Image (cartoon, rainbow, N blue to C red; front, side, top):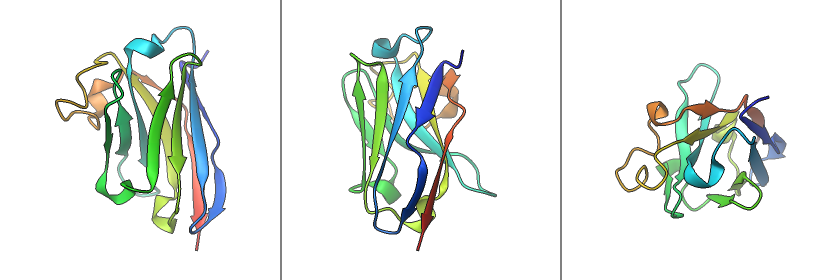
Length: 130
C-alpha cells in the first residue's frame, strides 16, 4: 500500500484551474506530519512548490504565490493544492510528501528540503497548454 496517493492531475488551458488531492494511508500519522507538494518538469530537478505544517503555517515558492493554495483536512487525512491561473510553466509531475517535523518545518525555513520528508506519493501529471 502506497503511503500517499495523489489525484486530480490532468490537462488544463493557460489561465485554468486544477485541484490536486493527496490521501494518506493509515501508516502515515497525517495529523502529526508536515506536508508538502513538490514538482518535477522534464529535464529539471524536483522543486518544492508549497508546504504546510501541523499548525497551518504555509510556505510557497515565489512563482506560485497568489495562484496556488495548499490546505489540509486532518479529518480526512487529505492534503490539497488548489492551482488557479495556471501557466504552461506549471507543467510537471506533482508529488505529495509527508515528514515528521510537524510543527517546525515552515517556521525554520525547511519546507522545501526533500530530506525532511520520509513518505512520498507516486505523483500525478499536470499539463498546461497555452
